[in-house]
Figure 1 (cartoon, helix red, strand yellow):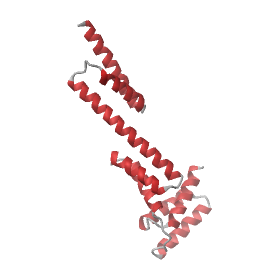
Figure 2 (figure 1 turned 135 degrees about the horizontal axis):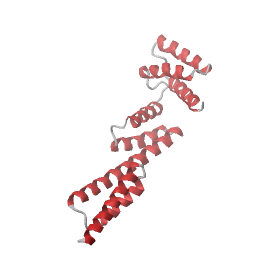
Figure 3 (figure 1 turned 120 degrees about the vertical axis):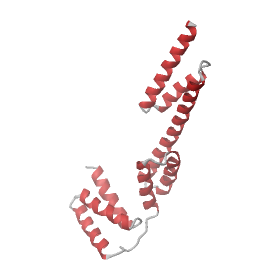
Figure 4 (figure 1 turned 45 degrees about the vertical axis):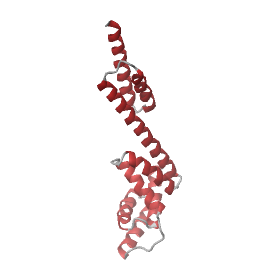
Length: 173
């Protein structure tokens, strides 16, 4: 009975360590600990179910994170079609992730960008105002205007290029 209690204590220690590693984002290490617990013959049905569930969640998260990171890498290399494929994979695993959705939208707009005339004079004039703001290094103000324009012309290459220029300048400040 004392041996059984020692095994249960060891098991609980392994599970606490796995939970801690998972909370820190160290998914691979956490996965190893959960698998160590899974190999233990002394798991009761409820604990086995919890361990199996945690393993599945971590594997899913790792797949999502991997696809997301690859999508980001392709996005910043301006390989927008490839980025979209990775973001699609990540969204299948995590469909409610708003940041993923935002990157998917950005990649989609750029992958499908077109040289097209401005839809009306107001958009054309607002674009000119935004371009002037970029020249004067007022990137945040320019972006506010450009993002509104993009809602009206999602795939306009000129608008997208100026958005990218302003965002890049802001990121390099």
